[in-house]
Each structure stands twice: as structure tokens, then as C-alpha cells.
Length: 570
Image 1: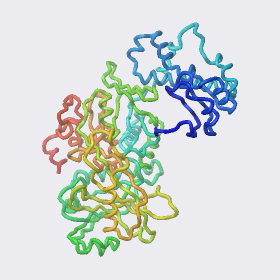
Image 2: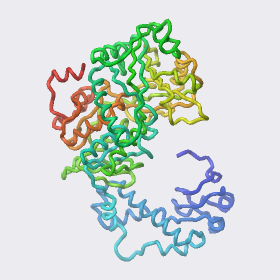
Image 3: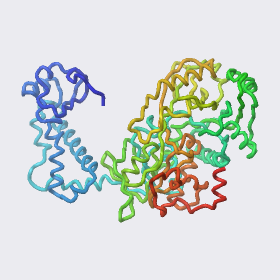
Image 4: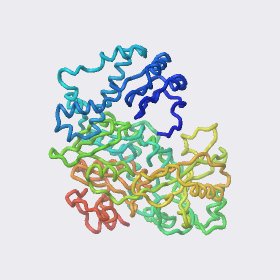
């Protein structure tokens, strides 16, 4: 909501006077801006007098009286009178949902009975106001709860990468799910899975993640065939820059060593001059103490489209419910079920739950009375820059490593123009440039997250573009997204209760594994063998548990031998 200094001069379709009796005077009623269609009462006596209401009537403005639109207390009292035990124990959002449902239905009925004519409203009230005789309206509440309860095998909280991937994998095993996303779309703009592009690559300093990517690419290919969607675009990837040591994205030298050890095709550049010769657009590398390694088979994933495709591939086995914010999650019931309740008043009863909501993970765990995880939330910024089409074709997908300096974390990336499909502006081309370090310190929740980011970080990105991509033009827009991080850069894929599994802590590197992560999460619920060793993704490792203890009985997988663990760490 935005603060309005003068509501009496603000155009609107619906006017809802709240806690402000007698506010609509004759003057207000006469001069209120054109276009208003309804005045829906949320306070006693919004009109200063009968003349003010008559003015609204003559202007064709329907007034839905408070006895219909603001009868919440009376309806709640009716439930209390009918079944006091239910009234005292029910999740409040269910009661609110029932009240909203009744109020909306009655308001609509009244408008219809009045034939959308304001002067007929008062005379038609008796057609929609229930009689005081007979069974109280609160007796309908238990049936309403049942009618608004969905039964499924698995409830998935979060419609980004992990949630849609889990739904896809479960569907292939014949397991049904309901996916709850509080945003208005899958991979909504407020979440880290949103956008045109995420990198995929085998070029890691870790053999484990390099091998994991190879398996994931097979699953991506299968998904593309099932949906007919082109989700991956091969355009190569260049790692280049200074010797920084290992970072959250690895390092040039570490990636080179793994590529050689696994016999993966690549090209190595020993100096900044060699990089500039190979990529003339990066002429700024010349004369600098840089090295580089290129993987031609790397590329980018169409991020938002990929989430939509996985949900589509889940088909009838997955019911996607958007605008469905979870309010309560009960995983400690005597019947072994998991019950989720949404802000809309819907109930989902399932055998299992998957929490895959990124930076909101701990908020949902807290709602479920489950231990929180040691997760950090980074504010990560990026932007689009204009570039001439003939120059755009020469800009590679690249990751630049340089040493940290104050707020400059030293990690920069660029996506080519083929990875900015959603930007449409007069036929111009754009590249995406961003950083892989946080704006400000890490956060523990989303309450203070700033989607505008930092102007100083944007200036750093601008300066980097001028230095490394001098042929690129001005900044077109900018974004700041939440990245959920772990201190060791390994995800969390584990059970935190007998019937609750969590994916979180993607640490800016999870998207490329897409459907494979869904297979891992599904294995936690079905008991099937996981496609990769999940030991280092445990929710019980010291880096995740911190001071909070999680029951040892809820382990995701049987303990692996120490030699297997060492292989994962390598």
C-alpha cells in the first residue's frame, strides 16, 4: 500500500472507508473524482448524512453497506456460539478466509439483486441478509473447511527452481503434489529464480560439482524433449582474471586443474594478452597479470522459462496454486499427515512436505515449529546495458575474478545478448552484467531486504563495464535479488522431520543442476537411491546446525563412509 495524503481527491474504482465514520460529506460526495464505481463500507456510517449518500446514488456509485461488507465480528461470533471448541482452536486464517468468502458472496449477491442500481440497494438488503431464526450461519464453517481442503501426497512450499524441479521429479514417479507459491507467477520477480539467464558449466574447482553438472545436463535434455521448450543455450564460458584463490565461484586455476583432471575440453590462456587476442572486446585485459580458461560447451539456462517448463512437465500430478502464502504448517500431527494452511484460507493435507522457498525458508520452518537453519541472505545486484548489435555478437559469456577491495567483492560476470530475451526496447541489444558478492552484510531474514540495492554497487558495475567492455553503452535498468547462502557453499537437501524435506542455501550455484535437484529431493521422500551422494548437503552438518540441534532420527541418508565423504569434499 502507498500512503495517500488526500484520499478525497484520489481516483479509484473502489472506495473502502475504514475506521473513519461520517467522512463522506456532501462536499466529498459531490467532488470525488470520476471513475469510482463502488463504496464498500468498512466502518460504521461512512456518510455524514443522508444527502451525502443520495449524491453518491445519483452519481451511480453503488454503496455496499457495513452489514454486508464488514460483518466479520458477527460471523466470528456465530462460529463461537455454534462450536466454541472449534472457535478457540482453529487456525485464524481459516476463519478469516470463511468470512471473506461469505462477505464477498453477499456483496456480489446484493449488487446483482439491486440490478447494479444504487437506489435499489436498501430495498434489496432483505434478500441477502440471513434471518435471525434457525441454525446460525457459523454451522456452515466446518463444511467450508472440508470443501476448501485439498488432499495430496506432497505439499511443496515455493515455486522457484527447487519447488518446480521436485514437482517434476515426483510426477515422473507417479506422486501427486500441490505447489504453493505466494507470488503471482512461478519464479516471481521477488525471488532468485526469476530472470532470463543462469549459467551452466562443468568448469568448477570441485570435481564433485563438475560431475554433478554432467548428470544434470542429461536431465535438462530430457526435460526439453518432454516439453518441446528450448531451455539451454550453448554459448561458451570464459573464466578470467587475477589469482584470487578459491571464491564462491571457484577460481581460474582451480577450474583449469579440474578440467584437465576430468579430461574435459577447454582452452587455457596464460596471459592477459592472450585473452585480449582471443576476445578483442576484452582489450582491457592486455598487459594485465591475468590468466583464463574457456569451456565451449557451457552456456546459459532460460531461468523463469525453466521453472514454468518443469511445472508443465509435472502435468496433472501437480496442482500449482499461485498467490498462496503459507500461514501455518503442522508436521507434528498424531495421524502423521502434514497440514498447510494458506493466507487465502485453503487447507492442504499431505503425507509429506517440501520446503523450497529460498530466503523465506526459516520463516516457514518457524511456522512449523521446526529448528531454523544457519542460512545467510545476500542482496545481489545486476543490470542490463545497451550495446550495438555488431558489438553484441563479440561479447562472450564470462566470469571475471579480481581481488576484493573494500565493498568491491571482486567477482563480476557478463551474459551475452542472447541471454537477455525479455528486454524489448526498439530493437536494441543488451548484455547482462552483475556481481557475485553481497550488497552490505548478510541478512538473516527478508524484513530488511532492499530490492533497490545500493547505488555504490551499481557504480562499481558501471566502472567495471567501462574498464572491461568499453564498447558497451549506458545502463538500461538494475535489479537486486535475494540469494540464500551457506557458509560452505553446499546446499541443504535433507529431511528436517520425518515427513518434511528442505532445499535451501543454493549459494548462487544451484540453478544449473535443475531437474537433478528435483530427483534428489524426491529421493528423500520416496526412499529411492539419490542420483548423487547427499552427505555434504546434510541439514545436520555443523555449518548448518550452528547452535540449533536437529534430531538424529531425521537423517536424510544413512551415514556414508569417511572415504566417500572425502571424495565429495574434493
